[in-house]
Amino acid sequence: MKIKTICCIGAGYVGGPTMAVIAQKCPHIKVIVVDINESRIAAWNDNDLNKLPVFEPGLDKIVEEARGRNLFFSTNVDQAIDEADMIFISVNTPTKTYGKGKGMAADLKYIELCARQIARVAKQDKIVVEKSTLPVRTASAIKNILDHTGNGVQFQILSNPEFLAEGTAVEDLLMPDRVLIGGDTSEAGKVAIQSLVDVYANWIPKERILTTNVWSSELSKLTANAFLAQRVSSINAMSVICEKTGADIDEVSKAIGMDSRIGSKFLKASVGFGGSCFQKDILNLVYIAKSYGLNEVADYWEQVIIMNDYQKNRFSDNIITKLYNTVSGKKITFLGWAFKKDTNDTRESPAIKVADNLLSEQAHIEVYDPKVTEERIYADLEYLNTRTNEENRSLLKVQNNPYNATQNSHAIAVLTEWDEFKTFDWQKIYDNMLKPAFVFDGRGILNTAELEKIGFICYKLGSGT
Ligand code: NAD
Ligand code: UGA
Image (cartoon, rainbow, N blue to C red):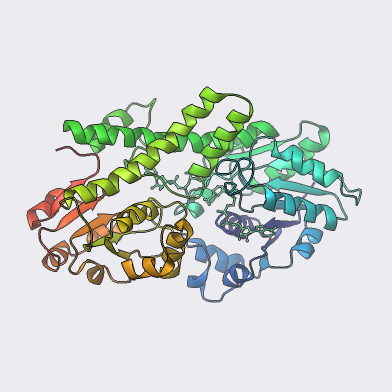
């Protein structure tokens, strides 16, 4: 079946960039991205490309090329469903905050709402593609809803998880390591799989398009994120041993990474992993394991999260200890708030937990992040509910200039690995800080030897030298 029109429900960090690239690479396919969030859609349609709701290097150019040609952003979900041959579901699947599985299971209410809406609107056969990350076997729930709601049309459900990382989304979408498509093994299922393969084959070499059964595809996504997060927790677990023993985590990473069986990627020690997915997907995996009575498997994966929490708390504890056991009334500058560089996304950013810990010790924090807005930072803190909004606003200030942010500070904490931090005039920063001037590099990006020459007292995560 040749796809002429695609609809994508959910214009977020995945739906927006993914569909923009499909539209750019497939000018013969009309791509409509829909969302119930009107301001998000308005931002995707904004003439000023700096106002796109998702910041990703290179995305503005792609949107500029395809938008209005074959890429459309709209709030009219029904119309887009009706028009499309293929519907991607790319809505959020956060951790449940209520009821059974609270704090662990994925909340599938948005997925179910989409399925019900598709069932209500569809008047011709459709291929429904799970783009969101979902617990294994969700496809059967979606199929059940679709098949029992009435218009008598045929649905095929495919799983096509997304592996892009934020900050490199465009690159990852243009040249993915692989595209994974899971589908039904029936004849109709094979036809559906092939029509999605044909879409990707417009720019991705065929050998990189992998097809599997639906359950393998759903589970592979959770597995990939669990393995990636586990690597970060593993290297972070070694970082504290380095600090105790005089080893250096960057040297250890390099030494083990040169073993081709281990590989060198994803071995950068840090203040902890953040992002909307690692924690939620591992918790989801833990929940699935527990629901099958596999407690040892659940405990194994849960330890990745426990280690990550430890790393965030250890970082703030260390700041307090080094600042003579009190940060009350002291000014600490945060360089970075995003969960990683080159994104404006702050979901589960380690900066939030570190700030919360320090604010509880009555520290004064000033934050500089090149892409994250002040409203976002306050919203992140407010969500924790640790103190009142007024208290958060009086204890934490947001600056749009790093030199103002560091003026009269007792200490600087690097929470995100933005490249520009390396190019700052560190002598100027030092001159304007209170002495002794401390730097706590939670990302291992600064040249601490140089900073020490200037006069800074440095803590480099994972270095005991
Ligand atoms: P997001 O929160 O940025 O976007 C989701 C969008 O869906 C929101 O704009 C929301 O308004 C919209 N939405 C929710 N219910 C809707 C409905 N019924 N109708 C129309 N719109 C609706 O989320 P995201 O980061 O794009 O993630 C989406 C999914 O992709 C999640 O399952 C996530 O795990 C997965 N994923 C995310 C990433 C990533 O880097 N962020 C990478 C791979 C996979
Ligand atoms: C991650 C995966 O890399 C993607 O493949 C996946 O599609 C996505 O999750 C998802 O499902 O949402 P993302 O969270 O955007 O992508 O970013 P990563 O580059 O994986 O970084 C995650 C966190 O780990 C960041 O806080 C990063 O700073 C941290 N990290 C990463 C480290 O601390 N050390 C490393 O070596 C690598």
